[in-house]
Amino acid sequence: MVYTLDEARALVPQVRAVLLQLAVLKSRQDDAHVALHGLLSSNGDPEHAGEADRHERDIREIGDDMRALLQHLGDLGVQLRDLEMGLVDFPGQRDGEPIWLCWRLSDPELAHWHGTDEGYASRKPW
Image (cartoon, rainbow, N blue to C red; front, side):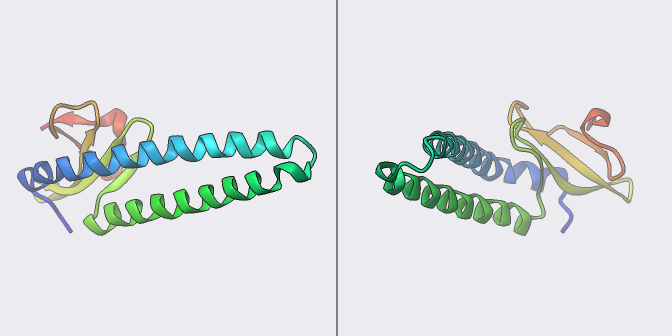
């Protein structure tokens, strides 16, 4: 799959929504990990077993939800580069050569690109 700049820009709202969902899920998963580790540090107190099971189940379910969202991005051909930054690349072409159309959540629009052998630090304005 190769996108024109306009096609990739049209997908940005959908990709933005997925990235925001991933960020919320990641935060929830991190919180559940912290809570679980706090319970486990109580040396397996039986009073905490049910709560620990709930956190483990939450962590698995959140992981499943995250994998589904990542699969959705993959189905679109979009490469997640950095979840914390909200950085993604769309496959594209420039002057007949393959490139990555580079966008991050804080960008007002998709307006950068870089070569397939380069990364974020090498991105250039369109």
